[in-house]
Image 1 (cartoon, one colour):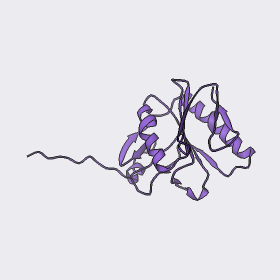
Image 2 (tube, helix red, strand yellow):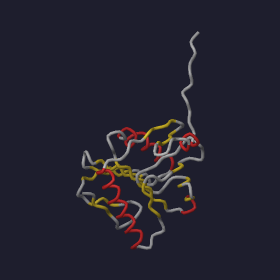
Image 3 (cartoon, one colour):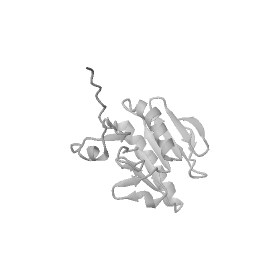
Image 4 (cartoon, one colour):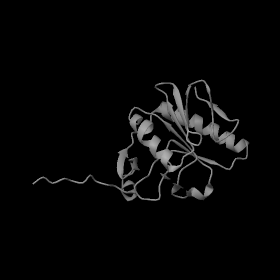
Length: 177
């Protein structure tokens, strides 16, 4: 007699039970462990995060920007928990002490060798379905930024050094070098 074993399904409780210092994300009940970011990854994250913060501050913006690690609970269940590299949230009602409950308006992921499949495939569809308005994939290996504007259903690609317009902020662009 063959016994078919059901694949383990995890919840947010399992994420919170991880040992200190161990980071993982949870998508549809499956745990994805995260490798520590490289120095270059952190430089890019810091630059983009600073540019967004300055724009918001200088324009009396309502949105808030949160760099990783920042918890995002995409759905109203306990099977999805992500930590985007950068989350921009414009609805302050979504923000609690635990993180963001619901989709941020804009998410930026900086690709690392271990996160390619996750950023380009799994998270792309998860973010779109959750209601994220804009999703950037910053790939330093390819010197490319792919911008998914889910509101207008467009995909644009930019090279490092080019001005990348921000869909949720008219007249604002970022040049990643």
